[in-house]
Amino acid sequence: MPRKELRVELLSVTPNALSLIYAAFRQCYHAGFVADMWPRLLSGEISREKQAEFVRSVLESGHDSPVEHVLFTFAIEGISRACSHQLVRHRIASYSQQSQRYVDASDMDYILPPAIAKLPEARARFESFMAEVQAAYRDLKLILESGGRGAKAKEDARFVLPQAAETKIVVSMNCRALHHFFELRCCNRAQWEIRALAERMLELCRQSLPAIFESAGAKCERLGYCPESPKFACGKYPTKDAS
Image 1 (cartoon, rainbow, N blue to C red):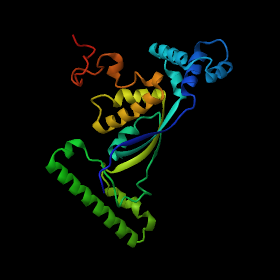
Image 2 (image 1 turned 60 degrees about the horizontal axis):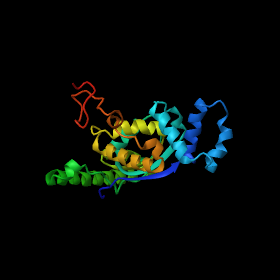
Image 3 (image 1 turned 120 degrees about the vertical axis):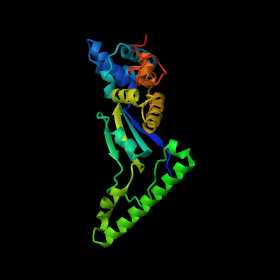
Image 4 (image 1 turned 90 degrees about the horizontal axis):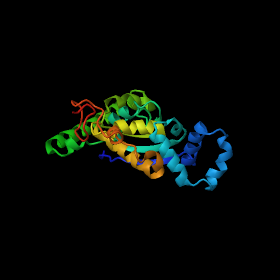
């Protein structure tokens, strides 16, 4: 039952992502049919630099709906159930999460919060409780199996598992949903675990599609001020109503 570390891998990005976004933007302002332009985009006749420059300029105007045509899919491990409960609140996304009903948690991995890890007394109590949980899960699973639940014993034994239990999940979001996700979850006020996840995902997005994600991140980074009230601001940027 070891502590688990965050790992994020980018599985897939919509092919020809920049050209697709460029074509979608151009169709909004172009009298012709962008399908006729498509071969020129793929061949490089319209350079990627020109495509990126056009996309950046339109995004700066506030028009961002065409970026929804491009989808990113991530494989994520080393997050807690507490983190995944926050993640799945983002509605414009698709999720496929490891099931505690079907996957045996007898050797459950867990996430150790840094604030607990740095205090020896807190860490010892936390790890002791994780061991207690694992023992209770195994005992219940064995008792239920002996009592006739068979393979279904896991679905009842899982009720003792904590929010610290590690989970794995596949997540797909379009670029617009990702921008919104990063605005909220890269903020200093976001909970530490989902902020670490968002920052790792953003790093991968910037590497893959810089024209779309180079300016992504916490909302204050784009605005130049904190949209929160002074009571909730972290202090990195002045609030909008600061005198």
